[in-house]
Image 1 (tube, rainbow, N blue to C red):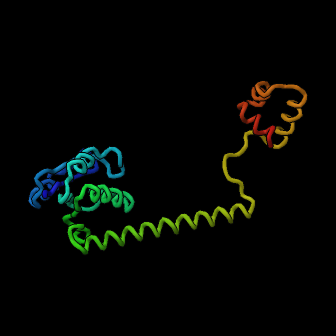
Image 2: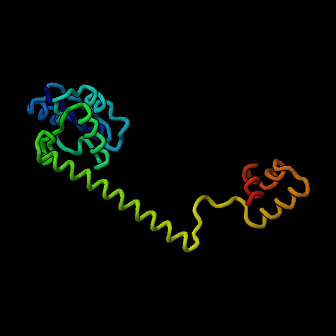
Image 3: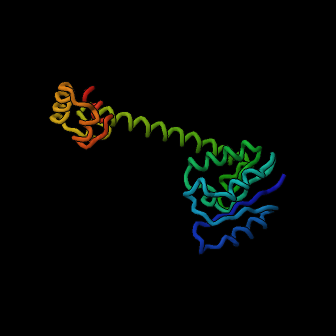
Length: 184
């Protein structure tokens, strides 16, 4: 069982040494540190390394929660990775989120439930808004390149023997657009 530290600063001119010192003082035998924006979920290579070295019983430690994640969604995903390794998580300045304690586990479970509840509410509001907009006659998707008159003339000219390629050149659009105009 080991404490594995993770330190991060967002800008190249910032220094993560104070975080590293605190993590070492908290018993972290290894500390992974990097200078990368928290918005970047793919560019945090040191975090990925820290997650890979976690073994059952280990604890991933960070100074503050915001050094690990920028959103609840990101936090829950990362904590799932930690849990999958059989490890725990602890933030030194945020003792309420310490999965090594029953209280921390409870809070994390509650956060996960609230996140799912919020996602479902957002999805429902979006679906309701779309239904209302459709009922009012709002059309979704890209606007047609061709207006009603152009589509009518294309149908007439195609029926008279012009090819889709010729019509596409004439109306400065793709053949697929001409095909859709003929179908509609």
